[in-house]
Length: 338
Image (cartoon, rainbow, N blue to C red; front, side):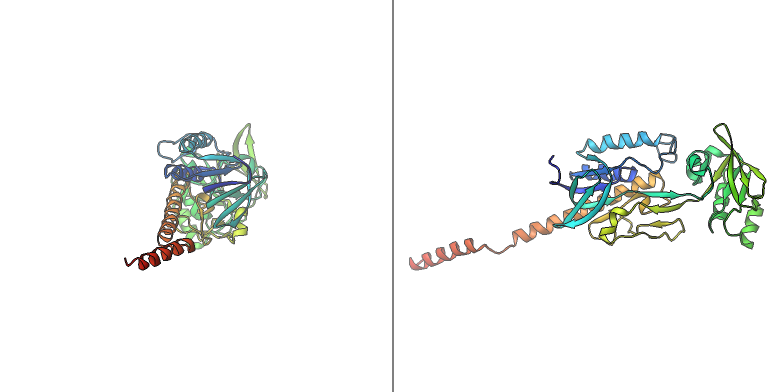
């Protein structure tokens, strides 16, 4: 296909579970769709994903491979690269890629996800997705009955500790830089046998390739087999900036998101979002579901536009040439007494 002269019904920016699900559904709706992806999924550090019915324990990369194959089976196309910006053009959008390619599409579905901004603790990033965890529904089973610490960094940390208590009774809330538990929170933590340890965490203790504890700035250590943190979500939303869409605070305190309705429709006409960029707390299954919902809404929107155009064309007035021929016929018939 020639560069800089391409047109699709929809361009999907981001090739994770949400983007591939959207591409699959749009392809099955007989829409031309291009997926733009730079190959940097949020869950790349994880060896396995969990909680996805029929795919529990599957490596994330395998899901993406199968998703690409399925979407391609319905005509979906793929472009490797990063979308730099999007602008409105002739009732649709022009998408500029870092490869120099320009893609034109009638609708946009942005599923670029988020960046997890982790607490500034040395060694934390290197162990993220292994024994430094976030969400118990994804990883709680794997650390069940182990000594687990919850790094307090915000007002939801006590709640996070109470969640992880479902998987282990060997739980410690590390006060770190977070707010002190309220009186009510402390009562609830005590009732569940969750210890609270003061002091800022300044490093991790490892043996071989395994986490065994954390170091405190006071000089002590806390033995642990896993550490739970609450990263702050920063949407990968640069491509949306020129369309007037900016991140806003997530109402649950998970960082930021791009606001959208239940189908992913945004305040910018013709633009949908799906996956973690719209819901930082969504797991893989939820992200895939949101991509399918966005695809259905996009297809319905295109159908409405195409139907409106068909009605307008059918009811369009005669052209000047057709009107002139009709007048000649009427005048001719009048002269002949018809």
